[in-house]
Length: 596
Image: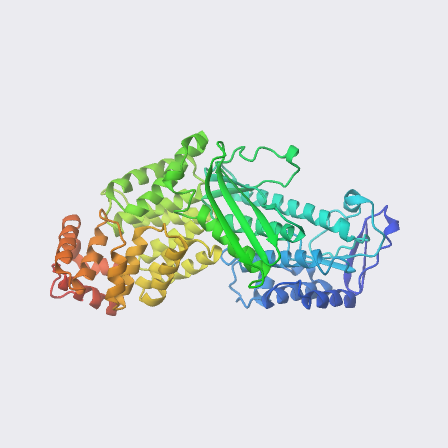
């Protein structure tokens, strides 16, 4: 291996291949290629992506390739401060994926004959720059053999083969396969400390979407498959595995080891794109969900279309209350012995969240305690358990008289969930909620905002953060977030629907409050009856208000003994406390004269 440098660019040339005659690209040539990319209509990227690319190229040309890290990009390109934390702020990781796809598209289209090829390899943010100058090598194997090995981060790599159009598409297809395979390995079998011991997540195998039309369809199929893996991997209740796009006879059984399989196809005709997606049970191959998405290619860029469709598929399939985590879709025969009980606990948790019942709380808490004892590295299990512990106090469900307070055990469980998997949205969501009901609203909301950034398509996280923002006093914004979550996922728990009703009540919109409270089905949840009685009373429905008030007092007879503590735990400000106390008196509750 011979290393040399010229014009500020590092070169690594493998010995034994003198026929390539490699020369380092001049910085002017690299900058010229950068300008060619940035001005091309086939480089479909917003300004922040263009700034990202410009920054890393200039850093590499200045000999600082080894310093190109998430922190430097975040602070120089995206305006983050010195307290930037890559674990809690994924902006660089997300935008790097978009940049890679933009470059792939450019070189597949107008850049296929360019003399300089720029890309951002997976696993680094430093650019790879290849000079194309020699005759075509015979086949992909020869190209692979010509590539230098063991390149350090930040080195500009040069190759001497020009890829002609008829060889470029197969090579790019192979690259997409490799990308998906690597993504599957990263997403499905993470090698960090969260995977040091067995964990029982549901296994979802994702088959790259099939191209059912011409070259344009191939581009969208590859981009959509990559985007979908990124979206699905954010839902930590799942272990997402990518299936290689191998020839049919060489493909392993897609259902091997998977509870569910996601597949689909892409059709492109003129300016119309149709994407179909199907979710199958792993062993039976029975289709349990399907979706079809049509898009007009003239109204949006390819990135926006791919991101939007991938988000809709991921939300329908993977999020809480989605297809996989809805009890009716459960098939015990498809579960391995190690994961069957854990999966049952997950379903039970989301079922409990829909009804908030005393008996279901006890059974779910017991189930999750068994599961986390058996799988101590199961981050999502600890996050769910944190909610069960917190609900002992905030909802007065199955308090343990001789143990520590529920919120203390809840905080321990939530923090353990995050320590096991720092990117687990459910863990951050649990800690946000615990801190909020421990009278630390500012810290809670900071964590919540970061958690939502980890997965903006998680409607459960969106709703929970909206609820906390509303209770902290910003009812307009919080209620809007709750309604957004509801529109994204109509299967959302009635608890959040009730909070939407309360949000409109607190803003003085009795008509909307009444409309939303009538959608709630939480007859076994005490606080539903309290909120309903306030809304009914102010709407002049005295009979319904009295009935709901009587039911609440039957379920929570001591609630008004210390109303101040109940309101303080929920962080209501002085204005909101006054509204709630006046409403409680109007509904006939035994509010003391000194309550404020």
